[in-house]
Length: 418
Ligand SMILES: Cc1cc2nc3c(=O)[nH]c(=O)nc-3n(C[C@H](O)[C@H](O)[C@H](O)COP(=O)(O)OP(=O)(O)OC[C@H]3O[C@@H](n4cnc5c(N)ncnc54)[C@H](O)[C@@H]3O)c2cc1C
Image (cartoon, rainbow, N blue to C red; front, side, top):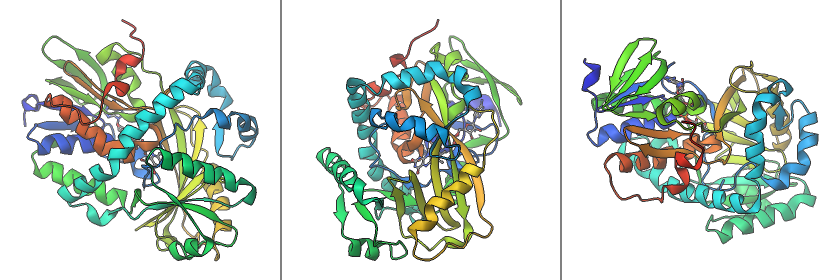
């Protein structure tokens, strides 16, 4: 195989790189996918598996600022800052704070909405096209609250979402019991979001997509770490641990690791950091729930999967290098257990940590600059937005009209440094 015969090199084989690779290859583009580790073994493997089209507000929200000090004092709470990382985080955190002001917040929220409102249809079509339907369930999800004093927060939130077209309705306690008989429904209130879903086996989806990609003629090189990317006039030189490669075009989709390569490829220093998140997989509880259930007051989510019940959530600022604190994953159990009528069987539970790629404005970078395509920074929503994002890259590639206005996701919203 001559690597130089490919039309495009994709850097990073997480869900963003893989869906982009399959989308382009299926349209006749000759793609090679370079992955530093193995395909979809990182953050994309361990997310909560929620097709979270209802999450249309940036996670960084001014209304939560007053709770931050208390959250930070609790080492296993929903938000944690590793103080040793603070000096490196400061410039990023400052910009994040600025984006909580009313005007940027509203603009950002609309741009998330634009991606999310196409995501369900896009995933359904993609699942049909590539034979993934058995693992993509689109029967909705619940958002719950336990403290009666907070019921108005849930109701107001539901109304705010309905006002912008994110369909939801409150459930009675009996209805909650019908949707999810295992939940303790006597002290629970919930909204039902019909246009959402969940993925029951992420690994099966990724394996199947990798096989399809291969059958379509695509090529994967695993354990291939792109160390440096040097744009030239008529090509891009990729220096990798497996030797130099000359690429005609490049897609950068290296998730939270995209910053240095983005700078080399475009000259733009993208304010990208990571919000680390955790999950606990409970293998004996695959049938306990029917759909993703999020808790507004406990700040976590539970998703039923073929291989168990996945409890996921929390945000931790500690960068890419600090070791995980798996206590944070185990702590999720203390939130889940009280929500069920019967105790969970937690034998053989497995904790996990991953790196959400997070820009200061909570929006991904989806763009084309000459030979370089950018597709990274999907923060809490990479799985949800992956197919739409891949489609936008294909529209750029073929110079087609955009189905979603791409201006909000351009890299030029950040400063150029050369
Ligand atoms: C706890 C948690 C729960 C989440 N829940 C959800 C959810 O329910 N729904 C949702 O939509 N999203 C969710 N997310 C977010 C989602 O998982 C991410 O947005 C998404 O996985 C990002 O995908 P990615 O492909 O950009 O990054 P990654 O999955 O990190 O993939 C990037 C790949 O690039 C490779 N790479 C990096 N550098 C190089 C290099 N130099 N050369 C070659 N390869 C390289 C890496 O090895 C990696 O495989 C969650 C995240 C977490 C942590």
